Length: 119
Image (cartoon, rainbow, N blue to C red; front, top):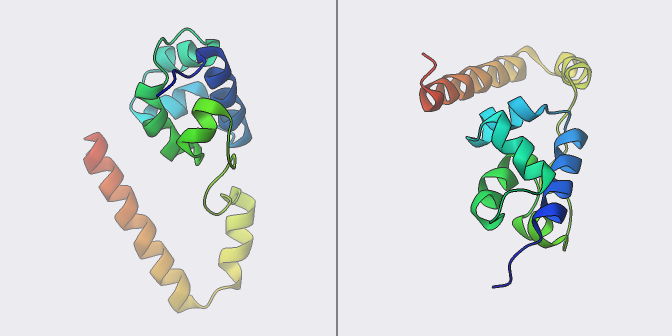
């Protein structure tokens, strides 16, 4: 497998991070890297982008091939709604659907806390 260009990889990571409205610190928290590591990645000083591509791919909602080589779609999955869009759309739902969504969010938050050991 050919090596990815660290500078181009870093540029694509930065582009996706900014498109999602994430800070370097938040991207680091979500991907398991420090803010310093994210800075190095974005500056193109990380020697082997393949090592971090999978973890960043999940958080940035971008295929690994796009992050490493710029091929394929930039984004995967549904777009993430803004807080205002969430609020507006939530209010259209029935009370039963709102309760189901609230329960799902609570469950996901608990799972995240357990994963991060933030209990």
